[in-house]
Length: 185
Image 1 (cartoon, helix red, strand yellow):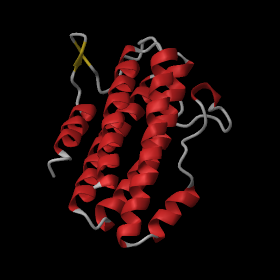
Image 2 (image 1 turned 135 degrees about the vertical axis):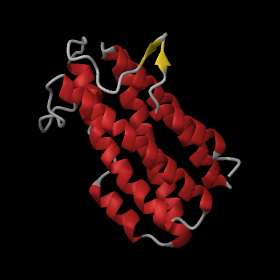
Image 3 (image 1 turned 45 degrees about the vertical axis):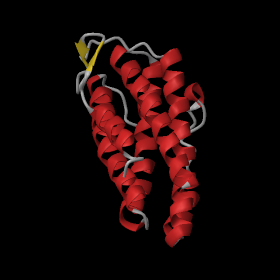
Image 4 (image 1 turned 60 degrees about the horizontal axis):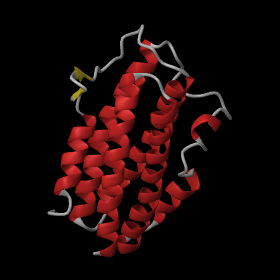
């Protein structure tokens, strides 16, 4: 549990509406807020990415043998549920679709890296094998989130989306460190 204390703090901070440069981050961006195709693509891809993360974390919260991994998975579920709601609200406020057209992921790299086959294999794993499989898969999954966030920071224009991308980059990097520690424990 000591290992997870920084992660839980990071997870709680990542999903909150804390201030950014003196301005509160809104739950739904102003409809007139400046945004570009990069902001839209980032949010669309992250919504899909979060759906996969929530699926994996849900399985881990129920089936992981260690309490540390179950707590981690619970924190991820709480954080990513709130983040997904925020991203959906921004896209709706901008009158943009929640999903990108098929094949339009080139701006921020490939589509979320975790395949349905990998998630299915995770669901079949048991005991210690499950825990190692979850941690390894989720490390790769969160690394993909960091890459998407870095692309948004480079290419996006919306201040709220960029602030969110920065929090994703920081929190997922912290989660990866925590999971590597759990794997090596």
